[in-house]
Length: 302
Image (cartoon, rainbow, N blue to C red; front, side):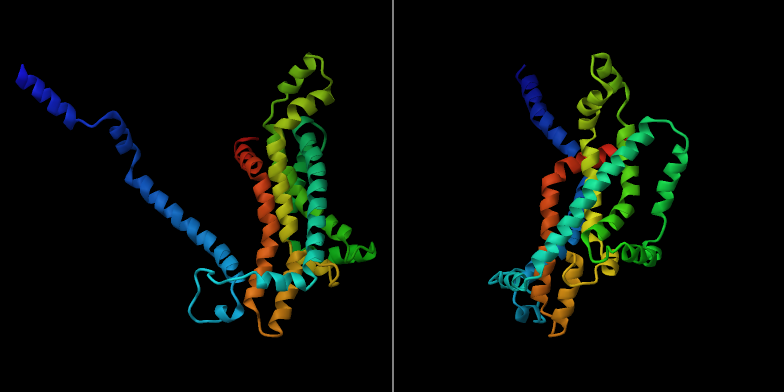
């Protein structure tokens, strides 16, 4: 009896416990390798951003040294102060923010109504309209510059917020329609019909039931429109030719050219680049939750 109990105790001690078995099953070499690869890729991706911020805090004398400075010990915000003291950053920032906000609001309004019409109604020319939306995306932007310049010039909209906003809206609306179409088509019309049976009108049913469900799609489409308007350079270069009406990409280009004329101050250039990126980072921090759910929903709908 003693021998049997001793053997059973030894076998129980030798056998792994349930948590240990689960841990052993979870820790797989393949997953570890994929995790390491993901971390390496993330570091490679984020390193240029870190190097930009790091360089913006260092004086130009340190940056010109052949030995790289990996950490900004002893750095300062002098480069940022010098960039802002030039007096041209905030006008360019206001120009970019105004154009981006106009583009986002108008794009979402037009694209939302168009996507709703395509998904909810059957009308003559519906297929042709959808094909036209796709074909417009295939047109090279460079081939339209001359026509756009002449059109804006004839309307007196060169060097104006309205002129650039119109061109940005025309460029962004087609793809935004296509994005929102998937979200609208993924919401069953039966939800609205059930709400109408309960006594709501069609408009009330749409606003109370369908519209809240479209919030992630609207945010994801708005992020796309914002980035297109914020980062666009070539159209702005053609239409906005006066120094007093420049967006941030044009301002950064002019800042680099002015710096190059007196030997490039890379510290100030990196500080200017960081300032251009800050509004986008703030915007992403505000909408990141909705944007992520919107992109995932759009991947499986319509």
